[in-house]
Image (cartoon, helix red, strand yellow):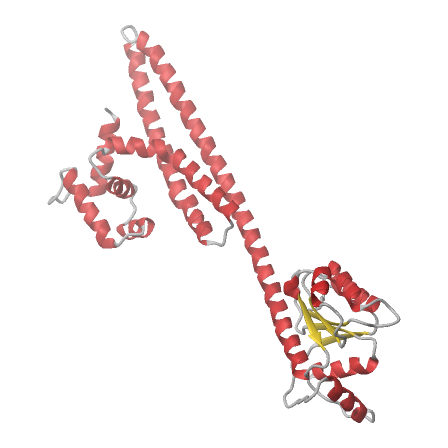
Length: 365
Protein backbone atom coordinates (compact mmCIF):
# COMPACT_ATOMS: atom_id res chain seq x y z
CA UNK A 1 0.00 0.00 0.00
CA UNK A 2 1.61 3.28 -1.11
CA UNK A 3 0.29 6.42 0.60
CA UNK A 4 1.19 10.07 0.05
CA UNK A 5 0.36 11.73 3.38
CA UNK A 6 2.29 14.60 4.94
CA UNK A 7 1.09 13.81 8.49
CA UNK A 8 1.56 10.36 10.08
CA UNK A 9 -1.81 9.06 11.30
CA UNK A 10 -2.03 7.52 14.77
CA UNK A 11 -4.99 5.61 16.20
CA UNK A 12 -5.63 5.80 19.99
CA UNK A 13 -8.13 3.35 21.52
CA UNK A 14 -9.10 3.63 25.22
CA UNK A 15 -12.46 3.52 27.00
CA UNK A 16 -11.63 6.50 29.28
CA UNK A 17 -12.05 9.93 27.71
CA UNK A 18 -9.61 11.49 30.14
CA UNK A 19 -6.87 9.09 29.05
CA UNK A 20 -7.58 9.88 25.41
CA UNK A 21 -7.13 13.56 26.21
CA UNK A 22 -3.85 12.77 27.95
CA UNK A 23 -2.66 10.96 24.82
CA UNK A 24 -3.69 13.97 22.77
CA UNK A 25 -1.60 16.31 24.90
CA UNK A 26 1.45 14.04 24.82
CA UNK A 27 1.39 13.62 21.03
CA UNK A 28 0.07 17.00 19.93
CA UNK A 29 3.28 18.91 20.58
CA UNK A 30 1.40 21.76 22.27
CA UNK A 31 -0.62 22.33 25.43
CA UNK A 32 -3.81 24.37 25.50
CA UNK A 33 -4.70 25.81 28.90
CA UNK A 34 -8.39 25.28 29.89
CA UNK A 35 -10.37 25.34 33.12
CA UNK A 36 -9.91 21.58 33.39
CA UNK A 37 -6.17 21.73 32.67
CA UNK A 38 -5.04 21.12 36.27
CA UNK A 39 -7.15 17.95 36.48
CA UNK A 40 -5.83 16.72 33.13
CA UNK A 41 -2.27 17.51 34.19
CA UNK A 42 -2.74 15.47 37.34
CA UNK A 43 -4.12 12.55 35.32
CA UNK A 44 -1.23 12.79 32.87
CA UNK A 45 1.26 12.80 35.74
CA UNK A 46 -0.37 9.66 37.10
CA UNK A 47 -0.24 7.88 33.70
CA UNK A 48 3.12 9.30 32.63
CA UNK A 49 5.26 9.93 35.76
CA UNK A 50 8.01 12.57 35.55
CA UNK A 51 6.59 13.93 32.28
CA UNK A 52 8.66 16.77 30.85
CA UNK A 53 7.40 18.58 27.76
CA UNK A 54 10.26 20.95 27.07
CA UNK A 55 10.18 20.52 23.28
CA UNK A 56 7.66 20.83 20.48
CA UNK A 57 6.60 17.42 19.18
CA UNK A 58 6.12 16.76 15.46
CA UNK A 59 2.49 16.96 14.43
CA UNK A 60 0.47 13.75 14.16
CA UNK A 61 -3.00 13.21 12.74
CA UNK A 62 -4.74 11.59 15.74
CA UNK A 63 -7.90 9.50 15.70
CA UNK A 64 -9.39 8.80 19.17
CA UNK A 65 -11.80 5.89 19.80
CA UNK A 66 -13.38 4.66 23.05
CA UNK A 67 -14.42 1.16 21.91
CA UNK A 68 -12.81 -1.61 19.89
CA UNK A 69 -15.50 -1.77 17.21
CA UNK A 70 -15.14 1.98 16.62
CA UNK A 71 -11.40 1.51 16.06
CA UNK A 72 -11.99 -1.34 13.60
CA UNK A 73 -14.39 0.82 11.58
CA UNK A 74 -11.91 3.71 11.66
CA UNK A 75 -9.23 1.45 10.17
CA UNK A 76 -11.66 0.14 7.55
CA UNK A 77 -12.48 3.71 6.53
CA UNK A 78 -8.79 4.68 6.43
CA UNK A 79 -8.07 1.84 4.00
CA UNK A 80 -10.99 2.83 1.77
CA UNK A 81 -9.89 6.47 1.74
CA UNK A 82 -6.21 5.50 1.24
CA UNK A 83 -5.12 7.30 4.39
CA UNK A 84 -4.02 4.40 6.65
CA UNK A 85 -2.64 4.62 10.17
CA UNK A 86 1.05 4.16 10.88
CA UNK A 87 0.61 3.30 14.59
CA UNK A 88 -2.29 2.12 16.78
CA UNK A 89 -2.12 2.38 20.62
CA UNK A 90 -4.80 -0.02 21.92
CA UNK A 91 -5.88 -0.49 25.55
CA UNK A 92 -6.69 -4.09 26.49
CA UNK A 93 -9.80 -3.78 28.67
CA UNK A 94 -12.53 -1.50 27.36
CA UNK A 95 -15.90 -2.39 28.93
CA UNK A 96 -18.65 -2.85 27.96
CA UNK A 97 -17.36 -3.77 24.45
CA UNK A 98 -14.87 -6.34 23.25
CA UNK A 99 -11.29 -6.14 24.49
CA UNK A 100 -8.26 -4.65 22.78
CA UNK A 101 -6.82 -8.01 21.70
CA UNK A 102 -9.94 -8.65 19.63
CA UNK A 103 -9.72 -5.15 18.16
CA UNK A 104 -6.02 -5.62 17.32
CA UNK A 105 -6.73 -8.95 15.61
CA UNK A 106 -9.52 -7.43 13.48
CA UNK A 107 -7.38 -4.41 12.62
CA UNK A 108 -4.55 -6.67 11.50
CA UNK A 109 -6.93 -8.45 9.10
CA UNK A 110 -7.72 -5.08 7.50
CA UNK A 111 -4.25 -3.53 7.52
CA UNK A 112 -1.10 -5.72 7.48
CA UNK A 113 1.24 -2.71 7.71
CA UNK A 114 0.05 -0.78 10.79
CA UNK A 115 2.27 -1.03 13.89
CA UNK A 116 0.14 -2.08 16.89
CA UNK A 117 1.09 -1.20 20.48
CA UNK A 118 -0.88 -3.12 23.15
CA UNK A 119 -1.22 -0.98 26.29
CA UNK A 120 -2.41 -2.35 29.66
CA UNK A 121 -2.15 -1.72 33.38
CA UNK A 122 -2.79 -5.39 34.25
CA UNK A 123 0.07 -7.81 34.85
CA UNK A 124 -1.97 -10.99 34.30
CA UNK A 125 -1.88 -10.56 30.51
CA UNK A 126 0.65 -12.77 28.72
CA UNK A 127 2.34 -10.96 25.81
CA UNK A 128 3.15 -14.31 24.19
CA UNK A 129 -0.57 -15.06 23.83
CA UNK A 130 -1.15 -11.67 22.22
CA UNK A 131 1.76 -12.28 19.87
CA UNK A 132 0.19 -15.58 18.81
CA UNK A 133 -3.16 -13.90 18.11
CA UNK A 134 -1.95 -10.71 16.43
CA UNK A 135 0.66 -11.43 13.75
CA UNK A 136 3.33 -10.60 12.65
CA UNK A 137 5.57 -10.07 15.69
CA UNK A 138 7.71 -7.40 14.01
CA UNK A 139 4.68 -5.05 13.91
CA UNK A 140 3.39 -5.79 17.42
CA UNK A 141 4.64 -4.16 20.63
CA UNK A 142 3.59 -4.38 24.29
CA UNK A 143 3.62 -1.54 26.85
CA UNK A 144 2.86 -1.75 30.57
CA UNK A 145 1.21 1.13 32.44
CA UNK A 146 2.27 3.41 33.98
CA UNK A 147 4.82 4.66 31.49
CA UNK A 148 6.73 7.83 30.75
CA UNK A 149 5.28 10.27 28.23
CA UNK A 150 8.59 10.13 26.41
CA UNK A 151 7.95 6.45 25.75
CA UNK A 152 4.71 7.27 23.95
CA UNK A 153 6.40 10.05 22.00
CA UNK A 154 9.33 7.86 20.96
CA UNK A 155 7.05 4.95 20.03
CA UNK A 156 5.00 7.29 17.84
CA UNK A 157 8.08 8.83 16.20
CA UNK A 158 10.04 5.62 15.64
CA UNK A 159 7.14 3.46 14.49
CA UNK A 160 5.81 6.17 12.15
CA UNK A 161 9.27 6.54 10.61
CA UNK A 162 9.54 2.75 10.26
CA UNK A 163 6.09 2.60 8.65
CA UNK A 164 6.96 5.40 6.20
CA UNK A 165 10.22 3.68 5.23
CA UNK A 166 8.34 0.43 4.56
CA UNK A 167 5.84 2.25 2.34
CA UNK A 168 8.63 3.88 0.32
CA UNK A 169 10.48 0.56 -0.02
CA UNK A 170 7.30 -1.17 -1.21
CA UNK A 171 6.68 1.57 -3.78
CA UNK A 172 10.26 1.30 -5.03
CA UNK A 173 10.02 -2.50 -5.36
CA UNK A 174 6.73 -2.21 -7.24
CA UNK A 175 8.30 0.31 -9.62
CA UNK A 176 11.31 -1.95 -10.18
CA UNK A 177 9.04 -4.95 -10.81
CA UNK A 178 7.17 -2.94 -13.43
CA UNK A 179 10.42 -1.90 -15.12
CA UNK A 180 11.71 -5.48 -15.15
CA UNK A 181 8.45 -6.72 -16.69
CA UNK A 182 8.57 -4.02 -19.37
CA UNK A 183 12.22 -4.68 -20.21
CA UNK A 184 11.63 -8.44 -20.25
CA UNK A 185 8.76 -7.99 -22.68
CA UNK A 186 10.95 -5.84 -24.94
CA UNK A 187 13.74 -8.42 -24.82
CA UNK A 188 11.34 -11.25 -25.66
CA UNK A 189 10.09 -9.35 -28.71
CA UNK A 190 13.66 -8.67 -29.85
CA UNK A 191 14.66 -12.30 -29.38
CA UNK A 192 11.61 -13.46 -31.34
CA UNK A 193 12.64 -11.16 -34.18
CA UNK A 194 16.18 -12.55 -34.08
CA UNK A 195 14.94 -16.12 -34.13
CA UNK A 196 12.72 -15.34 -37.12
CA UNK A 197 15.65 -13.72 -38.93
CA UNK A 198 17.85 -16.72 -38.19
CA UNK A 199 15.15 -19.08 -39.43
CA UNK A 200 14.87 -17.19 -42.71
CA UNK A 201 18.64 -17.32 -43.04
CA UNK A 202 18.68 -21.12 -42.63
CA UNK A 203 15.80 -21.53 -45.08
CA UNK A 204 17.62 -19.41 -47.65
CA UNK A 205 20.81 -21.43 -47.19
CA UNK A 206 18.98 -24.74 -47.54
CA UNK A 207 17.20 -23.56 -50.67
CA UNK A 208 20.50 -22.43 -52.14
CA UNK A 209 22.07 -25.84 -51.55
CA UNK A 210 19.17 -27.54 -53.32
CA UNK A 211 19.46 -25.20 -56.27
CA UNK A 212 23.23 -25.68 -56.45
CA UNK A 213 22.87 -29.49 -56.47
CA UNK A 214 20.32 -29.39 -59.28
CA UNK A 215 22.44 -27.08 -61.40
CA UNK A 216 25.58 -29.17 -60.82
CA UNK A 217 24.00 -32.10 -62.71
CA UNK A 218 23.51 -29.92 -65.81
CA UNK A 219 26.72 -27.91 -65.53
CA UNK A 220 28.24 -29.25 -68.81
CA UNK A 221 25.19 -28.38 -70.94
CA UNK A 222 24.17 -25.21 -69.13
CA UNK A 223 27.29 -23.07 -68.98
CA UNK A 224 25.30 -19.88 -69.25
CA UNK A 225 22.93 -21.04 -66.55
CA UNK A 226 25.90 -21.96 -64.38
CA UNK A 227 27.28 -18.43 -64.73
CA UNK A 228 23.93 -17.05 -63.67
CA UNK A 229 23.98 -19.38 -60.71
CA UNK A 230 27.42 -18.13 -59.70
CA UNK A 231 26.09 -14.60 -59.80
CA UNK A 232 23.16 -15.69 -57.67
CA UNK A 233 25.53 -17.28 -55.19
CA UNK A 234 27.64 -14.12 -55.03
CA UNK A 235 24.52 -12.10 -54.32
CA UNK A 236 23.49 -14.59 -51.67
CA UNK A 237 26.92 -14.24 -50.04
CA UNK A 238 26.39 -10.50 -49.90
CA UNK A 239 22.97 -11.01 -48.39
CA UNK A 240 24.44 -13.46 -45.93
CA UNK A 241 27.10 -10.96 -44.85
CA UNK A 242 24.43 -8.30 -44.52
CA UNK A 243 22.33 -10.61 -42.35
CA UNK A 244 25.43 -11.44 -40.30
CA UNK A 245 26.21 -7.77 -39.70
CA UNK A 246 22.62 -6.99 -38.80
CA UNK A 247 22.37 -9.90 -36.39
CA UNK A 248 25.73 -9.13 -34.75
CA UNK A 249 24.90 -5.42 -34.50
CA UNK A 250 21.48 -6.15 -33.02
CA UNK A 251 22.97 -8.57 -30.51
CA UNK A 252 25.83 -6.29 -29.37
CA UNK A 253 24.15 -2.87 -29.57
CA UNK A 254 20.42 -3.45 -28.95
CA UNK A 255 20.28 -6.45 -26.61
CA UNK A 256 23.49 -6.82 -24.58
CA UNK A 257 23.32 -3.26 -23.06
CA UNK A 258 19.85 -4.03 -21.70
CA UNK A 259 21.02 -7.41 -20.40
CA UNK A 260 23.88 -5.63 -18.60
CA UNK A 261 21.44 -3.15 -17.05
CA UNK A 262 19.14 -5.95 -15.97
CA UNK A 263 22.08 -7.85 -14.44
CA UNK A 264 22.96 -4.80 -12.31
CA UNK A 265 19.35 -4.32 -11.13
CA UNK A 266 17.98 -6.05 -7.99
CA UNK A 267 16.68 -9.32 -9.50
CA UNK A 268 15.59 -12.35 -7.55
CA UNK A 269 16.95 -15.84 -8.28
CA UNK A 270 14.01 -16.68 -10.55
CA UNK A 271 14.60 -13.58 -12.68
CA UNK A 272 18.38 -14.16 -12.68
CA UNK A 273 17.81 -17.65 -14.13
CA UNK A 274 15.77 -16.17 -16.98
CA UNK A 275 18.53 -13.63 -17.62
CA UNK A 276 21.09 -16.45 -17.92
CA UNK A 277 18.79 -18.32 -20.33
CA UNK A 278 18.45 -15.19 -22.49
CA UNK A 279 22.24 -14.74 -22.62
CA UNK A 280 22.73 -18.43 -23.54
CA UNK A 281 20.09 -18.30 -26.29
CA UNK A 282 21.58 -15.07 -27.64
CA UNK A 283 25.03 -16.68 -27.79
CA UNK A 284 23.58 -19.66 -29.71
CA UNK A 285 21.94 -17.29 -32.20
CA UNK A 286 25.16 -15.43 -33.05
CA UNK A 287 27.45 -18.49 -32.77
CA UNK A 288 27.23 -19.46 -36.51
CA UNK A 289 28.46 -16.03 -37.54
CA UNK A 290 31.31 -16.00 -35.00
CA UNK A 291 32.46 -19.47 -36.16
CA UNK A 292 32.44 -18.34 -39.80
CA UNK A 293 34.50 -15.28 -38.94
CA UNK A 294 36.90 -17.40 -36.87
CA UNK A 295 37.48 -19.67 -39.89
CA UNK A 296 38.37 -16.72 -42.09
CA UNK A 297 40.73 -15.22 -39.53
CA UNK A 298 41.95 -18.49 -38.01
CA UNK A 299 45.28 -17.03 -36.97
CA UNK A 300 43.70 -14.47 -34.65
CA UNK A 301 43.00 -15.06 -30.95
CA UNK A 302 39.36 -14.75 -29.74
CA UNK A 303 40.03 -11.22 -28.45
CA UNK A 304 41.82 -10.22 -31.66
CA UNK A 305 39.03 -11.75 -33.71
CA UNK A 306 36.43 -9.74 -31.80
CA UNK A 307 38.40 -6.50 -32.22
CA UNK A 308 39.02 -7.22 -35.93
CA UNK A 309 35.30 -7.68 -36.48
CA UNK A 310 34.54 -4.34 -34.79
CA UNK A 311 37.26 -2.56 -36.81
CA UNK A 312 35.85 -4.06 -40.00
CA UNK A 313 32.45 -2.56 -39.07
CA UNK A 314 34.00 0.90 -38.67
CA UNK A 315 33.86 1.04 -34.85
CA UNK A 316 36.34 3.55 -33.39
CA UNK A 317 39.08 2.59 -30.91
CA UNK A 318 37.30 4.53 -28.14
CA UNK A 319 33.98 2.76 -28.78
CA UNK A 320 35.75 -0.63 -28.94
CA UNK A 321 37.35 0.18 -25.59
CA UNK A 322 33.93 1.00 -24.11
CA UNK A 323 32.20 -2.06 -25.57
CA UNK A 324 34.87 -4.58 -24.54
CA UNK A 325 35.58 -2.81 -21.23
CA UNK A 326 39.34 -2.59 -21.80
CA UNK A 327 41.73 0.34 -21.89
CA UNK A 328 42.52 2.18 -25.13
CA UNK A 329 46.13 1.10 -24.70
CA UNK A 330 45.09 -2.59 -24.77
CA UNK A 331 42.97 -2.00 -27.89
CA UNK A 332 45.95 -0.37 -29.64
CA UNK A 333 48.13 -3.33 -28.64
CA UNK A 334 45.70 -5.81 -30.20
CA UNK A 335 45.43 -3.65 -33.34
CA UNK A 336 49.22 -3.90 -33.76
CA UNK A 337 49.07 -7.68 -33.31
CA UNK A 338 46.34 -7.93 -35.96
CA UNK A 339 48.38 -5.86 -38.42
CA UNK A 340 51.39 -8.09 -37.78
CA UNK A 341 49.44 -11.34 -38.31
CA UNK A 342 47.83 -10.23 -41.56
CA UNK A 343 51.17 -8.90 -42.87
CA UNK A 344 50.71 -5.11 -42.94
CA UNK A 345 52.78 -4.09 -39.93
CA UNK A 346 55.02 -1.04 -40.53
CA UNK A 347 52.98 -0.10 -43.60
CA UNK A 348 50.52 2.73 -44.24
CA UNK A 349 47.76 0.33 -45.23
CA UNK A 350 44.31 1.08 -43.75
CA UNK A 351 43.48 -1.78 -41.37
CA UNK A 352 39.72 -1.58 -41.88
CA UNK A 353 40.05 -1.61 -45.69
CA UNK A 354 42.43 -4.58 -45.56
CA UNK A 355 40.07 -6.54 -43.29
CA UNK A 356 37.13 -5.82 -45.60
CA UNK A 357 39.14 -6.88 -48.68
CA UNK A 358 40.42 -9.97 -46.89
CA UNK A 359 36.90 -11.01 -45.95
CA UNK A 360 35.71 -10.55 -49.54
CA UNK A 361 38.63 -12.57 -50.94
CA UNK A 362 38.08 -15.39 -48.44
CA UNK A 363 34.34 -15.43 -49.17
CA UNK A 364 35.10 -16.12 -52.87
CA UNK A 365 37.04 -19.24 -51.89
